[in-house]
Length: 219
Image 1: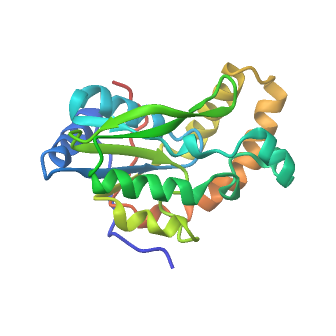
Image 2: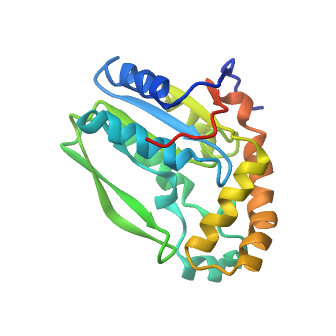
């Protein structure tokens, strides 16, 4: 079963979320904030805005850096559903979060996903030990499947972004087009593989501390 955190609905704007994140950064030597949501929900935009606002107090480590390579997905027969829960190195992601939580190394390097090439780049994100808040965002942070289920207990707070299905799909299709996909393909992929993933992710919504209904989370 999904661990419930007594989720609260948030309908305010970005400034309130920035202050909540800033409070986490001040709460101890290091805190982990997880931002979850379906594809196109705006979780990446929110995470980027928080880190930009907090400056040296925060570092962004996205889950997407743990996409399996395209060549490995082809080998496994999963390339046509890239983004599904079994197309990530989940154990590697969990191990990295544990290192970040421990904060006992001078610097930890994390991978970064580059949408323009649809591949992850190793060692692209440097996280010094003195950064007090780690913001990590991704689809499956609140999943109860192994080994994803180890992530929830590590998070000091978990936020779920839900702007509504219509806006989410509109954003998702536009994003696929912006990164070079044709309009027909973008819509087909958004309503096919992406939608199946979205339904799985939506089932984890109740495990968040905060459900963010705001539609504009830009800085």
